[in-house]
Image (cartoon, rainbow, N blue to C red):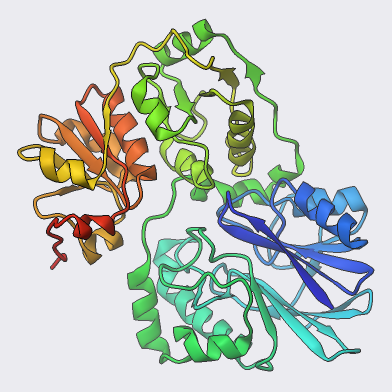
Length: 447
């Protein structure tokens, strides 16, 4: 038995292809399942079944589409209500995939009907647990996404599920879906690539902390939920990921101007320094990166008219692809020339912590990190507004120049573009937060 792990960095997840050398089971594939098929072809594997551990809250599943393409069964909990045909599976079912035995485990907690798949190879005695959003490396999946009011009840179920999985043979390999950047994972955890249940028994609090205390700690650790998450469950129940994402059309410069005047969102995916030197008034900057889809999905109102612009065809295509994984449709794209003459913005400054120390006296410092990050340490007298809350709070910020920072500069760059769009005088601090202390800046821990 072997497990091929396919990284999905734009979603902060992993997909797994577990196989016997000939036949394989795919677990939790994204909407774009081409990397899975490429991996299967490279390994000489025939996809024999496809499964989702749960109805996902953070991305569109590609499981239904992949199963249909290969004419195989799509497994999903028989208790889930969905609007398409699937093979409903229940805890205790044992299904043969080639030479492998797959046991379905009911592991509620992350969702009401979450399941995990224990794959065993009788010939070698090896086993792998495909745990989805249940037991993760060093943590578990969040329990507040189905309904925040159920977070504690689901937390108790998640603790019990983790204990059930922790009771499996310690040498069982652990392969979760979440925990690598997805907000579906609880706040504290590890990002290990490989691990066993023995590793979790040594280091996962879910397996060493009494239930009620663990649930208290778990629920207290939850941060905000990206806005688009509340849309994903219904879309996945409708099988939305089985439909191809519509291709955006090329648009002209005039189209982009007209779209901005009409209130559309124009996302410029160029690097933050390039955007700061010149951009189209009314556009915002979310540079092409694995985090683009998360923050675009969080900040752009669902269903809003959206255009993507940039100076690289590859970056634009990457952004459109990543947005499609969460069901965000891009109406049009525009490729900027190497030295566009139609920028009409006033540029803004990009600085590091050394420049901040020299030049920021008397100005407003805006920290756009999450609450938990701010609590660990922040600059005295800084104003804290998490990025996802910023647009609505810009009118209430004190007047004058704004120096904006985050942990590394990515989120601060988005914030700077939102501030610039609102007409604020802004300086973008794009430097690692850890370097603030190196430059002698005082850091205060929240009370």
